[in-house]
Image 1: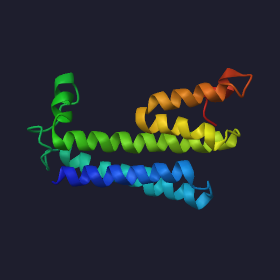
Image 2 (image 1 turned 45 degrees about the vertical axis):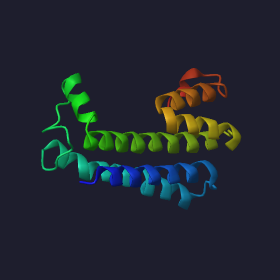
Image 3 (image 1 turned 90 degrees about the vertical axis):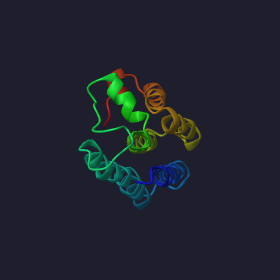
Image 4 (image 1 turned 135 degrees about the horizontal axis):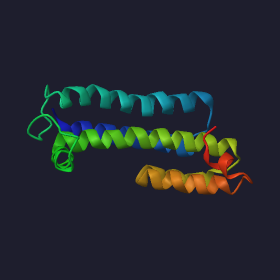
Length: 152
């Protein structure tokens, strides 16, 4: 497989979805497009590749079937072209999903785009750190901590 091409296409696609999420109007059709066309398509790409990669039907360059039960096995997988690509697609899909939730939730709770954009940037670049920032920010709008951190 051409791992460089798959990496480049998925990375560029995810960036486009993030730009749309951050700057486009939050109309229903746009949000559905980012959800299904972004997180959904990245997840589908991951699913289509990970099954044959895990079963050894395609070679990711790690020298066999990945072993997720040991640190050495995961390191071996991620040090290969196929493993790094599939791992990156995993991050892209999940971080975009979290970014969509953050954006919709921030809209619901009245946070302006000027506040959202840095949080979305940190979610794109550092995943859980961006989510943590948003949850802390959201907690400032509520008197009850549980309401501030439990997704609704």
